[in-house]
Amino acid sequence: MQWTILGAGAIGSLFATQLLRIGQSVNLLDTRHAQTPHQQLHPMLLELLDGSVCMCELPCIGYRDLSAIGNLLVTTKVWQVIPALKPLVGRLPETSPIILLHNGMGTAEWLLRHFPHNPLLAGVTSCGALKTDSKHIRHTGFGETWLGALNSSGEQCRELVPYLADALGHTAWSEHIGERQWRKLVINAVINPLTAVWNQPNGALLDRTEEVAALCQELHPLLVKQGFRETPETWCRQVLQVADRTARNFSSMHQDIAYHRKTEIDYITGYLLQQAEKQGIDLPKHRQLYLKVKALESTCTNE
Ligand code: PAF
Image 1: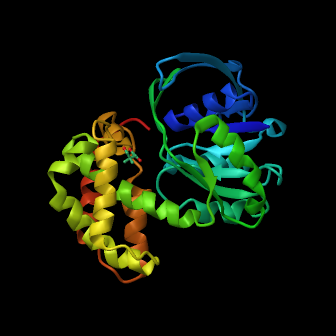
Image 2: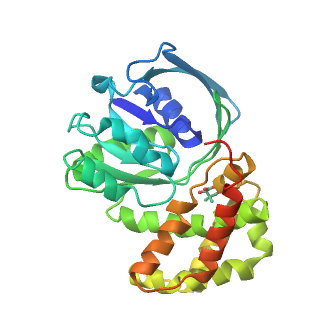
């Protein structure tokens, strides 16, 4: 089966190299190029959890190489999703599935409008990976990956699951992918901005649980409107479990700020603020955090 990775960051590179390792055909889509770039092969070195190392070369394609695009796994930063997919609108064969696998929410609506005939899917993963430079990826932790349909033709893509399970370990189909995306969104909306603003690793939340509890408490009315039944205390416990499991890691937002990059705050806290406003719910603590991250981000120079 052919897979195409759009966004060779940590997760995209992990998926690419692990799929290649199980014998799948994988290429990298570079939307900076219309045709296959001159430098056709991208070398990558994957360090596995057992310490062994696997070297591979991934073919690169441009966005006009439409026949080379397979199952399109979108693993870019969330704010890059729409600009990166725009060159494919009206061109991508209608049989090509598009799988959104990024942090944050708010891109699916655009995708459904612009690719109405393609099988559209969303995924949520808790696999851990670290990209130390453009060629080195370290698999840092096993996790769960879930795929689910965003439209009716996406429902026909369950056959993708066994390939991902073979490549990455636990992967399953979800009938409620939107719910899983929301759960991840809540975790990201607490861990990511707090660690970015505090300039601390995820484990710092364990020493400041009252701030975590206050953010979960404030989100609770919105989560109830979304149909979730958990108490604020349960949400808080779930956030703290992730912070504990990843205590030594720096969140992706912390790293974005540390490396002067644009963050995903608009699609995490920003998305929650928009949804809350639609419901007439005020989220002053989350808004304050949003503004603090935006202030830090305004000093960013790189994208
Ligand atoms: O964005 C991240 O860094 C991760 O999704 C999470 C769960 C916060 C762990 O670091």
